[in-house]
Image 1 (cartoon, rainbow, N blue to C red):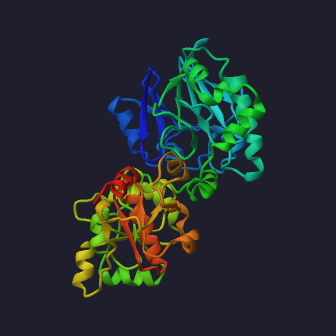
Image 2: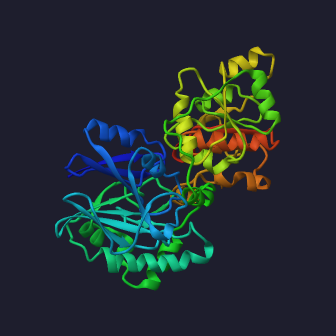
Image 3: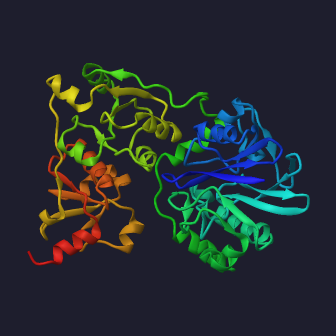
Length: 447
């Protein structure tokens, strides 16, 4: 039995491909694109037999339906109430995997229907797939289903962990789905796997043995999360569109095509590096640089019902942008501007600029807007700056000061925020790629 993790560093999640040792494999919590899982099976000469879900995901579109279409038997918690073909499983069920077995452990908390899977060889536990109930250094948040259920689920999480999981062997390997970088997670470490014993001794939340204190600590550590989380649970329940092969090919668009799509409500997503966007971009377009976390910021600031038009440099892989978009439920892909901004300018249409300023150009009189998460701001901030998270900035435009310069740590979120501010009609805005340490040092050093 071998376990191969398939890691999405941008969303902070891990899926797993289990070689069952009999020419077959099992996949746990796959993301939408089936290619990594089918590829891992093919590389090992395995037949995809099973795919299992621990819960209804809020942060990505599940790939289980894609893998079921490729021949896998789909296991999902009965309380998920999936609207498509699957085998519903419940607490105490045991699935015969052909020599090995998968035992189902109900672990509500992150979600009401959540289960963990204990892989056993005879009577010997071999591995625990914990979803979001338990992870290295933390657990998953309990506020993604309904505000009315947040505390109830936090209490359920406490009981699931202490009564169902910590009774397992100390040396049992734990393979979580959520981890560092996931907005589903609360206080994770950078590790992707752990053991029951390590979490018992090192996980700060597990050191709290009083339920009320645990709930207060957990709920006190919840930050904001991407707005698309509010809709994907239902998408995964009703059944995502099955493509078979991802990504679908994008339409090639002329400048005239793009202008007509914009007039019909399309959103222009410029995936180029922030320096290139700042030098010249289509008026009203949003800067979301193509990187591992592209899906998070697309899902946070873009209306899912609007057609998407991409603008890229010739050397960028737009198929990656399409995978990211589909992974967070963006189905309305209008196409890409053939020739990019060069074609737009060549057609006689103007380009706009947003200045990307260096740390040395920022003075004590500059209106700095830190667009990082509040949790990042709490750790380190620049004196005199204000904190407006990029995901909330459209709702907080009245708090953006005149002549604002947005900053994060690399310029990527800063330029996303600046493009949102500019699109709202506030022309006097710039961005910087300098982070808080560099900015603070620059402002305190003598000229």
